[in-house]
Structures are given as C-alpha cells and as structure tokens.
Length: 454
Image (cartoon, helix red, strand yellow):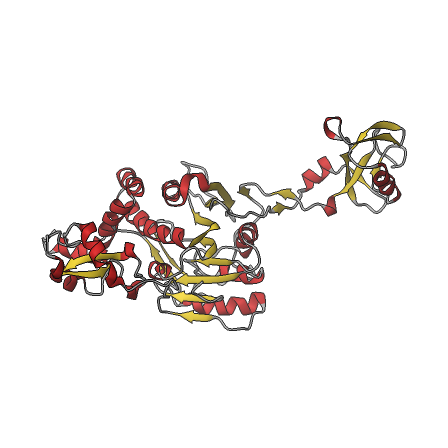
C-alpha cells in the first residue's frame, strides 16, 4: 500500500482514490451525500462547528463529459444512469454520475478478498443498488441492511408512514471474508427459550444430545439407552460438572431424556440479521456526539468493521466526515485511511481519537495526491500503440493527424491522481493538448463543446 496507516486526506476523494494502489484495501465504508436536496451545517458552539455541505445536485458540463466517458468505458453503467434520468430527472443523473466515477475507483483499489458498504437512504438507494450491481458485480451483492436510525417520529404529514431507517448496501468480492456478528438476547427470547434457572438464578435451557441419523455412541445414560452425540466418558464428566438437565437430578425439570445445560450468559447472542434495530441513532447527549451533520454512531461502524475485516486490515472511508470510521478502526486495531473535502475532518479525527480511544500518536495529514507504487515504463513508449488504437484520430476534436503531429497525454492528469497506465493515455493534436492543459479529459470535452468544435 502506498499510503501509511492513520492518514487523513483533505481534498476531492476522486483524485485521491485515483492515486491509491490497485487492490490494496480490505474494507471500504462510505457515507456519501444522499441527494436529499438539503443543506447541512453543524450547530454553532459544537465541536464540529463550521462543518457544512449542500446535498443538492445540478447537471454541469463536467458531469456531461464524465457521462460520455462512462458511456464509452462502462456501457451497462451508462444505461443505469440514463434510466435514472428518465425516471427521476437531471438532479439524480448528476448525483449518480458523481457516485459512479468514484465507485469505479473504489472497485479498483478493493482487494479480491475485500468488502464495501455503501450507506444511503431511500432517496437514491434503488438507483445506487443498480450502480453497485454494475460496478462490483450483481453476484457479489450480500445484503441490503436496514438500519433503524429513528430517534423519534420524523413525519409531520398525514399521507404516509414516518421515515425511520437508512439503507446500507453490502457487497463482498469473490473471496471476501465475513465474521458472524451477534445481537444480545432479548428478554422475550430468554423467557421463551431459557426456561430454567439454577440455584444461583442463572438461566439455562436443555440442549438435545441425540445423535443425528442413527450415528453416534450407543449406551445407557440415566436410564435411557440410545445413540448419543457424546462419548459415555464425556456424558459422565458433564454429569459430574452439573451440566446435565434431567428430571431425576434437576429440581423442577420436565426433561425426561437427558439434555445439556446451556446457560444464557454463555451465549454469544443471536446471529445478526439484515434489520438492525439494536443500534440507536445519536442524540445531542451522547458522549461521542460532536455536532457533525449526519454523524453516525460508532457502534454501527464497529459492527461493519468487525464483520468484514480482521486486525491489521486496511479500512478506507472516502467520505469520512467526522471520522467515525477512523475511530472505530483504531479501536479494533485496523489500519485506516480517511478522505474528506473539508479541513474540519482533520481536526475532528485528532479530537475524537484522543477523547474516545486515548490515542495520542501522530495522525498523518495530507493535501497532496498519492502516487501509485507500481513500476511502469515511460508513458511515451506507448505512443505507437495508442496511435494505432485511435487510428490516427485526435481523442479531443476527432480530427485525423499524422503521427508526428500527435502528443501523448494523460486522460486524468498526474496532478489529479492520473497514472502512466496504458488505460490512462491518449493522443491529442497540438491544439487540443494546449486547450486541455492540466485539466481532465472531461474538462477538455466540455471546453470543445462550449466553443462549438464538438
């Protein structure tokens, strides 16, 4: 990995993502804007005061050029965005273009053993699901997690039910890891399943000790002869330890066939489902609350991080905001990288790591774009190949030029995270190369259209 642990970047995450090494990240969690058509600002006087963003999207010339690039490189993704425009309008199209170009980079940096969780709400979740299917692969979809984020009634109208949940789209790559997570046993579950109490008041239930399908060990135990799943020596040991439930030895027991005494306080809980109701949303009285708009509880990120990564793995949050992902990753001994366009994120990650984790070490703060560590030949050696690929046509104005009049160029400039990989190289005529300057290909196309050349 070409970026050190505990690094937080300030800047456009698209440029920074382009500078990260391919297949270098184990887990990505992103909580991007939701296209909610709202303005967000942290309360004055809070730790996050000054943090603000507008979640409203309009179609710009750059968006249109990006759309053209997607149409050429990713036709299935293009169709998904075009359909969203027809059904939901240009604002949704602009938002999805912004997300799509970043998803493509996230897919590139994610390991084949990695996972990605995209946090959204019903405003755009259905459209984002189609984009995620296209980029990360529909067969790699794992769950649509419903997080009950409501702290109270959020609906003052009388025409629909109140809105009280967010959506988290979970995709795991073909060899992704997963560590089962558990939720505490509810009181109702305890009463219905752990019906006995021992002399110390500990709840327990009687587990079946029958051997499945006629296999196991055949012998007589406490007056019952049958096939047992444990050896006779193990059965006698459990009896000695008081771990056997039977009406002859356990007062009040209705168990006629011996069972194993399974205590409730030894249970991990119930395997977590895709409907998360046990993690509440933050309120202003929570210890971790810093006042950041859309701040998520650390417990939510802890569950995701523990489920889809192991100690020492690299966790990336490209919209890290108030750094909740960084805090949760640090707490569970993961390496982490955060990116946010606001300088407030850098202040908050230092504040929260010290206050919530007790971390007093160095946080690496960067505003530059990282350089990929892959060793590549000089990009100019690709000129003949690219000329043949483009059949002599300039990739800007589309005019035909002799080989000597063409200049090799980076689609995404190196100053914005572009690399010397062949897929990032093109040939431009001298005029288009001068017009493009240090801009992106999307900016060049927009300028050529505005001047009537295209």
